[in-house]
Length: 221
Ligand code: PMT
Image (cartoon, rainbow, N blue to C red):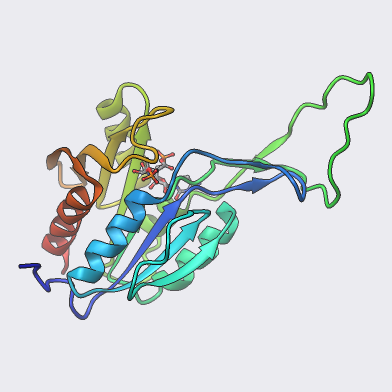
């Protein structure tokens, strides 16, 4: 029996990986498939929530009964998340968002000049959407959840990230070229701003999602 403990709630989930365009043909991207974010959206819908899923470049089918907003870049993801967050009870940032984007977008395909060395690639910082949401909550009492994708010193880096981002919960998971990205399963420790630490054993991404929603429901005002 699935609890209807998100009935009457609006939740926003971001999923997938942003693409930061260099020209009409190339982009800087990452390995996120969107599976973890889509699992969060599906489990929230099953628990009765109205769900807005801001989806960055995922090949997954739209989940039934979920409002899907497709985006490509971090700047577009920020706009879509902030718009949907205005009346949201909770926002979960499972998307892998690029920290930097190319400083210049070339409107025509960049050509290689014969014999010339390649130009260095200039980057500029992208907005930190999670930190922005956590600091200026679009709605009073809104619960903000982040993810931390770490390859090393996983828990220590996660604790530092929680302090820096100021979200209510941070789901710390280990990633690698073939670890977690694109997998059906995940394992994590969910850190709370209240100092709580909830380990979630290896299992389906839906199981981790349900634990996240349990912890969110406990924190609703
Ligand atoms: O999609 P899958 O293949 O299922 O893989 C799942 C996942 C590994 C992508 C997912 O579980 C995960 O860890 N997502 C977060 C990836 C990430 O961007 O981590 P980060 O440690 O770089 O960022 C920390 C947090 O800040 C994240 O909530 C991120 O959404 C957010 N962020 C990051 C940069 C930025 N400019 N703005 C942000 O809001």
